[in-house]
Amino acid sequence: MQYNELGKTNLSVSELSFGASSLGGVFHEVDENDAVEAVHAALAAGINYFDVAPAYGATRAERVLGKALHGVNRDRYILSTKVGKYTAPGSYGNDTFDYSAARIRASISESMERMGVDYIDIVYLHDFDYNGQVHADWALTEGYDTLQKLKEEGVIGNAGGGIYAMDLWKRVLVETNPDALLLHNHHCLNDIRIFELLPLAQRKGVGLVNASPFSSGLLTERGPAEWHPANADQRACFRKAAELCAERGSNISKLALQYSAQRGVAPTTLFSTARVQSVERNVAWFEEPCDYELVAEVQGVLEPVMNTQWEY
Image (cartoon, rainbow, N blue to C red; front, side, top):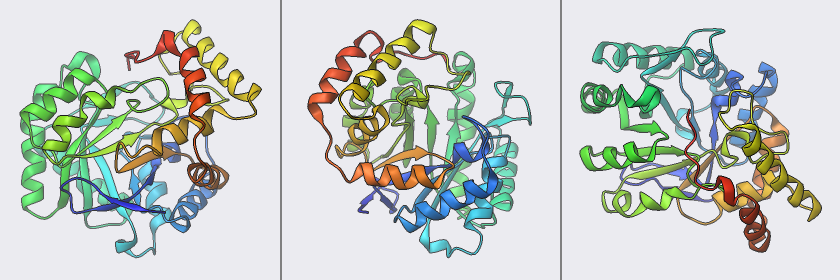
């Protein structure tokens, strides 16, 4: 595993990183012991960056990640979590949003307690593009200012955002000076809009975390979870791409990971799983060369859904 500097954060992150959303059962139900072992497998493979959020599984992901990291030397891993979006148990999709200074401070304290740490390397303002961006101004004023104060106090190391909407990403880069940004679904086989952000992000020294190489499950043989906003015709298009890969003796997930992670566009590419086998498989795939002729064929099939703006 190789390591890259994450913008101006002074953090050296592994080329592959671990997204802990799966630990909270976001995509399907998971066994907690399996999830803990998956984190240990990631550490054994040289992965040193772990990202989580209190909204993943209504805090379950943070609790499971904390259990997995218990006893691991703190200097062996880089940890990020998020603030502003919260989900109650058993109420997926019925989220609450709060970017106030008081809630952010309480949220970070709660996250640290759940994970058994006294310091978080990066904190992202979470999903402030939801609900038609109604919370964007709040997040980018009181929310952002609060994270900056927490940096000055030494409670967190770096501050940034984790959203999806491209127009809001551009506003973030223009109006604020983030240390790192977590982009999901914008550098994968069916979406390459990360390149719209690269020039300004690089000029400002912003570290980019490339998340969701499997496009939130669309680029897998299993397919996306029921909650994904893709309609029946769009899902059929992705199934056709997966079938093409199988006909060529390959696998849509393998091609997706290689395409997203191997090109050096971002310092790290973050995948999520709660299974040891998936961690080991992804690391092995990453070490094999990407078949770019197959990429061209698959992207031809995916042309009807290329750069689609999903309504999360």
